[in-house]
Length: 334
Image (cartoon, rainbow, N blue to C red):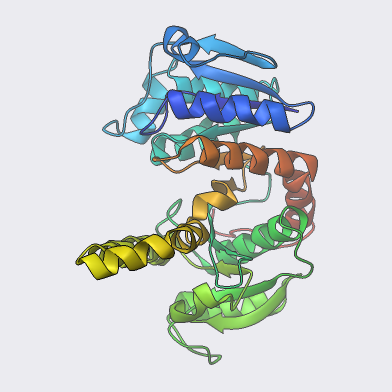
């Protein structure tokens, strides 16, 4: 199995990318990794190059670059060269913690879509109280969507959760303003009717307040609503821990109490950290493409690599292609 990684993408690149890659090749049998980026900077952290090769480039796409223009003009950027490794079939999948828009553009223009998929979806797995997590898609690959797109999201998400996360007949919910049938806007009403006939375990509408309780294994929505839901969950978690830290360091008594529950608090924080589940998959592309969180540390990078390997091993892309092409759920207007 071969994975290409943009070594220069992310807040802590290339150090954490390299450390995560070295950990992955130690623990995942048969894994070969290609790191794309500045060789001198990569080598300063690469203490063990077993099954790791480097493609040297000093050009990179930054967070300030306009995604589409950058992908088209910066042909030697680490992210673009990484995607090209997939296109040329020298690797099976790729990962970047860099510019999200640029990765989506490279995914579309370089890697390409699965035939029959109208639009790919950006799909992280988020934590739930029972520890199983749920897949949310789309969270921003496409701000606007049509009902047929949500059906494709549901099919892709269900295939991923069943094959990679090992959840049989995953429950698929449609994010809406109420659980009753007939609720929502024109998009959700049309999507609801189509989802009822899709080859998935559709459980109907779900509300945002129930997501972290594990109401569904897969939750589908348009990229605008999905991104708002994702950022709200992220912000709430960070605010909770900031408030808790303030309380626990406010007096001698609370500092002593904090000492007794320190390990429990760390466990709670880990439970709320969705990087523990890997990165956000760009489902619908011709090969697995993973967007790791911009602040990824070595552990998060390792989890994203494992996620990519699982997708390749379980042939998620192939199953999605076969399933979607056997159905008539494409966009008739495109």
